[in-house]
Image 1 (tube, rainbow, N blue to C red):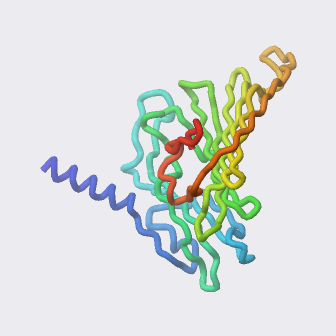
Image 2 (image 1 turned 180 degrees about the horizontal axis):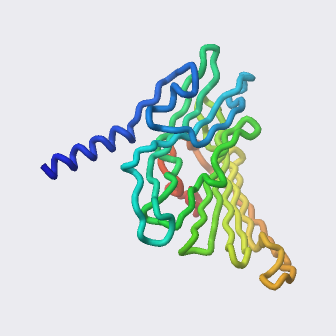
Image 3 (image 1 turned 120 degrees about the vertical axis):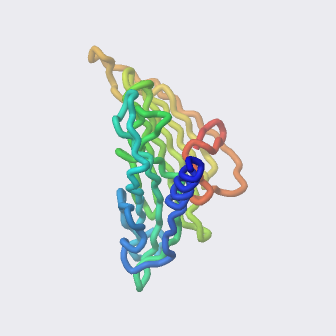
Length: 242
């Protein structure tokens, strides 16, 4: 009986993770499964047809994915899956152009219970016709470092290709800051070190910035696209985890 119960549980969980999203719909609610909710929504023209497309992040609300935490961090860890949807506006409603079921992190992480929601101060935006997804990594315990990673996707060749990656890391006590910017279209990367986000030390004395910028060129045969990316920080490129 115990084995049967476990099998049923994992089968049900697999169904949730593989939740089907329709290819087209009249309204946004048509793309949101029962017991799921929209947590991020932006509008803008992504395919240059002068129509307002929509990008959504939706999240399951299954209580089975909420876990009690007796360690440091939040008392409840929400591990409900999140999907990223790109909807192109049509005369009849919307078409589902892109769906990524794994790249947007869950609100909580059982292995890093002090980690804040990565999209709490980030999320999605449409900027200059491109889709930008920003993920923040800030921990209330265990590390003084915080970072922000921004992924820029442009719709070209009938795909959402990753054309830019910008990463900034800083020390919350000293203000020491380093950043990396990768332009996959121009095949150029800049590495900036020696900056300080505070401009002064803990006693109010001015901190002289000694920023140094290093430029590198690189070769890449084919651009990654949104559907290629399975999880953040898994792809290593020129010493950077993207």
